[in-house]
Image (cartoon, rainbow, N blue to C red; front, side, top):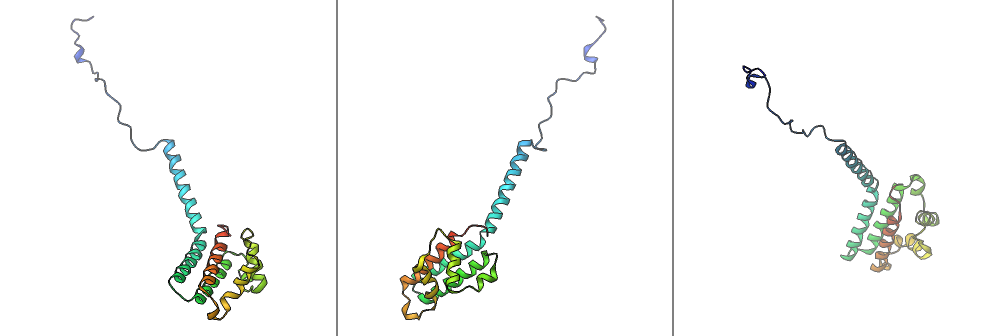
Length: 162
């Protein structure tokens, strides 16, 4: 070894730590989580959009049930429920013009066809056909309430996407 050699004279650096890990770019797992969250949000948006007609019809029919409980005219509520049911049926049917023109037996057959598990039957079909058109004195609160519940059940029995 050289006695005149001074190790402090060497151009060496002291031990140094690496820089702190940055937050960008994220690891692959974070990218995957972000993609899953975006897909879930889009899926929920599509589902909510496809259910908008159902929500509107149920809201209208629920409002009619509340109106009946608050003493509104049973005939007016039954007529409004019939209108809501027909509008909903037209909005979810691919053959809107055909549904719009249905009356009588074809109308009740259409309703039965679209909700087979509900099985409306002859009594319910008669209510759907006759109740909105009978004289006001003949419509009771119970009949109008049952009619609105029947319409609500039919709307609930429909699939989410038409």
